[in-house]
Image (cartoon, rainbow, N blue to C red; front, top):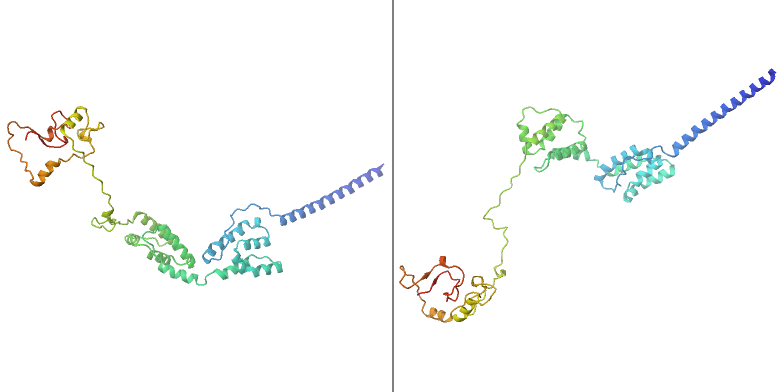
Length: 341
């Protein structure tokens, strides 16, 4: 009876060992598959930085394109892919005219199947980097000047850029302060001259200058225009001025006709029912007989100092502006009437 039990135990042990071996093989196969998948498909598929602008071959743009392409590969390198994908990514971010300059590198990489994008960047650096950039930047530091209309933050940014190009980040603080101060405008320099204590540290000195600049307001004086200066006055051609035509004169009518118009409530000058004489568009009629006599012997009208008996004088203050029954004048809009001369 012991023999069947022992035999059963032996079979169970054999099956257990077989199962353990199968599990170990499956685990090894699973690990191998995971390694293969990690090589084929990147785990980080979402990009963080936007794609840089393609380099068009202009040297001043190479200074900004090179850091942007390096940052893109450093941050999103896993999303871009392996070395071959990164090589073609750098190649694709070049304009066709620039691609022609690094075309031999592409042919060599395809032939040797060695994909190193750093070779493209090094080739572009040799072509588009100015070897005299440091010396020219150092000369620009001695000539830098702040314009009167240039804000202080803009001047600081411009100075920092030239200082970086001149490799002056590690210069002594006294040298950087001296070159920075000599380029400031006159108003800020006068404010600095009035300070007894100034920081010796470069960042602290910049903060002190910014505080002084905020207190010192630079006002631009705009001169007032000269009142006698007629240079800005546009000339007027007198011949082009349109003359306003004079109103026509009313025709002369006899007194009985004017009496009928007066009784009918019409204008005593033109006979219109739309207005009275004070609103008549026509000028008073001219008495041709009186004008002829005046041309031959001009009359001298003398206003007596004392009003004669039997005569009545009408002054402008006594004129009401409306026609009356006793008004026999051709134009009752006159300011002075003498009816009893």
